[in-house]
Picture 1: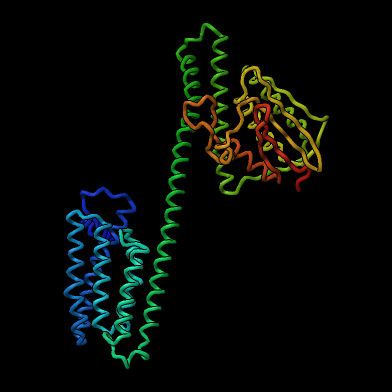
Picture 2: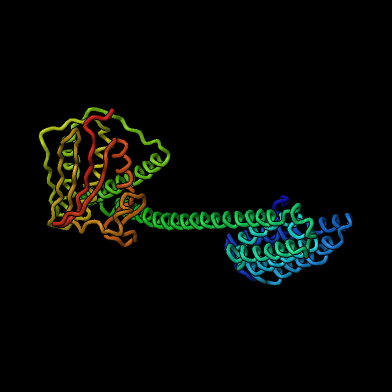
Length: 431
């Protein structure tokens, strides 16, 4: 059985023009407008009857004769297909006019109807039609000015009652409340627009990331499936060498999948603040030598030189596993972007109680447009699935978090002679 909330939404949607394609925000505005019209009709009718029963025939009659039929006409206009913005303008303009007439016959600026002016301003800015911000403020200011002049000249109240009634103070208070409502509405719009832009940017990044990760998953999975398919079909039974090569391809691509999963888990740990370090005494030179040795074979396959310049030893206190992860990421990236025949230079230096790791590639460098987003997650300079270099766009983001948790800094600079130099600077002792 539908809930009361669902019944209310169906009732509100009944009045929204079915022929008009509304986005989520416009649908929300339309529902709020319908709610104001439906419940406003009931409230206005009740107020009109009360004022008539109190003997205030003029004000009560205006509400019953002018305001209620107008609210019903607005509902009918919505049902007939008039846009939410146009109906909202009609609703605001007519309401302001009725309130002004009630004030004219109900003591001018001493009328209780003045309290509704700021509400009208808020409603108009929410509905976001033509009567928003400055336009509505000017309209309501003109109404207040007419009421003030009428009160001052004794057209709406007696001249003797002017000092005691203080219409000028009431006009100033009403204008101030209306101005505040308009400022708040503008602030709300600015915040809402900023949130909308942020959502759009997050959606763009999410779409790019889904495309990148899908590509990164599909590539090794295809290689694994192809290699295992050949083995399973018995196509390599007579060639042990090719069988071993197929197994090696499957193993290598399975490791690639494992690295991608590890990077995704690291992103989750960083986001939740749960990335922890296991500090121990280590040798920066040995860490660099181990990282370089890991990529010797890959460098040879790519026909890229890989050189290390470092002192005999350089002790430091760090998480050796995490620091190795950073070096692996930097060297891997350098090999990806270095052309055949180029050289990747890895160096370890020290000074002022700090150790510096640097990795220089022979690639094209980092463009000025992409540089500000280089260490963001899920970002790559070429985010298309047809790019020449593989990668999830997570490595530098994770590396930056690891380095900063060590109390260090990671950065880069384009080498004037070509290529890019990534540097990691860490304190020698971390407590």
